[in-house]
Every structure is written in C-alpha cells, then in structure tokens.
Amino acid sequence: MASKSQKLTFPADFLWGAATASFQIEGAANEDGRGTSIWDTFCRTPGAVVNGDTGDVACDHYHRYPEDIELMRQIGIKAYRFSIAWPRIIPEGTGAINSAGLDFYDRLVDNLLAKEITPYATLYHWDLPQPLQDAGGWPNRATVDAFLKYTDIITYRLGDRVKNWITINEPWVVAFLGYWLGVHAPGIKDMAAATQAAHHTLLAHGQAVPIIRANSSGARVGITLDINWIEPASDSDADKATAEGMDGFNHRWFLDPLYKGEYPADVLNFLGENAPKVQEGDFKAITTPTDFMGVNYYRRTITKHDPAQPGGTGFEHPEGEYTAMDWEVYPLGLYNVLTRLKRDYAIPPLYITENGAAYEDELTPDGQVHDDKRQAYLEGHLAACHRAIQEGVPLKGYFVWSLLDNFEWAFGYTRRFGITHIDYTTLKRTLKQSGEWYGKVAQANGF
Image (cartoon, rainbow, N blue to C red; front, side, top):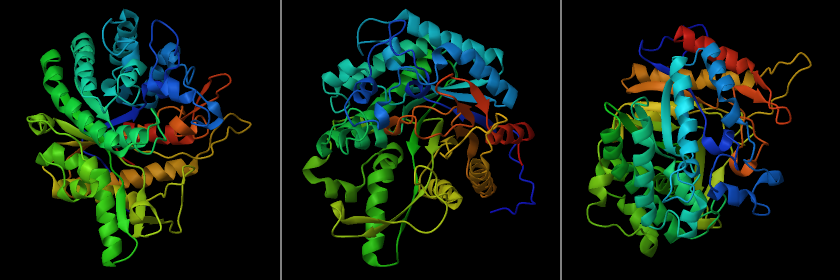
C-alpha cells in the first residue's frame, strides 16, 4: 500500500459516487400506491429484525430526496447509485402499474441530472413484491418473467435519461441468506430452494440485459456481486480445501456462469440433489455480455476445516481492527479481489458499487461526527483500488456505502454505515467527518 505521504491520483475519468437502496432509505411504505415487499413482511416477523425495526419511515428519502441530492452536490459526488422499489412500480408484482411510483423516480432522476449527478439505477435490491413470494418467490421461474416485465416498464420510462443500469444486487444474499439461512427476507431455510433462487436471479439478469438496451439507447448494463476475500487458516490441505469450497459456494457459483457459462463442478458435486434445475438456453442468456460488473467488498474471511461445524467449515478471528458488524478491516483483501477477477475471468470494466464500514457514531455537543475510523477505512480501501488500477485492473469508479445511515436489514437501525448521520427522531442530516473527507477526495480526484 502507499505510504501516507504519497499523493494518489486516480485516472481522469474515474467516477466518484455514493450508494443507497430503496427499502433502506425511502420510507413512505404505505404511500402513493406502493405495495408490500417481502421485507415489510419480514420486519413484522417476531425476532427477525433487531428491536422490531421496520422500513416504514427509514430516512424518509421519498419526501426528502431533494435535500439528499443537494447534499451530494455540495460534497462533490458525481454519481448516485440508488435502487428502484419494484412494489412502487407494480404493487402486486405483476399486473397493474402504479403511475405514482413511476412519477417518483422521474422526479428523482430529473433532480439528479439538474445537479449534474449521474444516476446509476439498480433494478433489484431485495424488495420483492410479497404477492410474488406468495406464489413461490425467486425459486419459482415465473418470478423471472415478472422481473422482465417490471424491467421493461421502468427502463422504458427512465431509459431516455438513465444510461447506467444494474440488474440484480448481490444474488448470493438474495438466494442464500433469504432462502437457505433464512436470516433475510423471506426467511426460508431450504437449500434446494436457495440454489434455484440463485439460478433464477442470474437468469433474470441475463434476460433483462437486451430489454434494457432496447429501451435505453446507449445504455451500459451490469450486475453487482458481493465478493469478499477468503483465506485458509493454514497451509494444510484440509484448510485450503475448505477455503476453496467456500469461495466456490460464495463467489465462483456466480462468476463461473456469468463469465464461463457453467456452474463450478466442485460445488455441483457438493450440492448433489440440491443443485438447481437448468433449462436449455439458460447459460446462453446468463452469459449475455455486459458493459461492467459491480463489486461490493467489505471484509476478509479466514476459514478452516472443522468437522464439528456445519459443512466442516470453521472460522478464525485474527487480531486486528473490526467494524461494528464484527467484520475485519482488511484493505489488502480488496486489492486481492480485484486482481483475482482480472486474472481468472474475462471481466468487463469494474466499479466498486459498495464499500464502507459501520461504527458507533455519535454526535458531539457541537453537532459534529468525528468518525476517524471510517475515514481511515475508506482511505485504506481507496489506496487498494489505486494499487489495483496501477496493475492494470479496469476499475472505473467507486461508490461509498452509504450516503446515509439507514435501515441495515436484520440489524434494523443499530448499525450506521453512512457518511451522513441520520437522527432517526428528527430525520436531520449531518455530514460526518468522513463525508467531508470523501468529498475532498472526489473533488481532487485523489488524496
């Protein structure tokens, strides 16, 4: 990594952005015709979310978006990655279109463009309409068809102005946290359902790409995967095999079909009868070339062989710095991920679509948030990005997670990832020290 005294300058066209997701910030859950999502239902499942928190109000971005966009303009952020709430557009998942939902995203996009901020729209960031889950959810192939109709509607409406589209955010989380471990909505624990859900999210991505391009002239389309750095605890064959297996299940299960047109044989063998049902032509759709790939990176995982644990997989917790999520701060892992993608796959250009950290932020009496640890986290990971670029990785931009403190899924409002502090009583926004620093980096194109 670079020394603190070295000036790191990024390529002239490097894009500096911030990211959010609809359910985590919008609120207005019962306004203007929005339907119910699986997360609305999950939040009301006893014990599913810390403190029984919900996304009903969240950051009230639905009403306060002009303020949030102006904040980005003042910081110097040039791009905004947001997600569109499927239940706002088609409340039942299929059928009738809600014009008020389309109108909201019209206003959001127009306001962004007026402030010279480039919109990056994510079509699916986990808020599946509940009626589609009632009909089987992502394990049901009909959900793919519903997603394509939703994609057609929203990209036709916004495609004249939005030219950067992300189909699915983190299909691993959608499938395996939602349908296998059950710690995310819809809270199901069924391995076969999870692998089928994973396949269908990839299929939905691939089949959506040509629809987006047809509706949005000159559009750039990609998918976002969560990729962390996995290491074996030792050089033993057992530990190395465990790390390889976890990498297969977490990463290669999605990377291989996208860029090689097949599922990894070792993971298929492990899954056995729980492997997904694949139809003829599915891989042809999944491998549809994209214009970029999004990478969400947060941490390193050190794994070891442990017969006493499920799947024989144990974990080590080395000494070091950890965030409030109990995730190790490990910038070298981001560099390793980026160079691995370049080495092992015929990847398109990359964007860091999420990177950030949760800490116990507090407002001081003078109304400031001095989050030195978050600033150091961002600095270390941006240095890793710079190093990867210097070594030929086609990394084109960085979106900090997140613009705002927000609803952190099963953790409710107990984890703060934002570069902007939210007072959940008054909804007042306060730019943190890290936000001020990040804005200076964006304006200087380096640090």
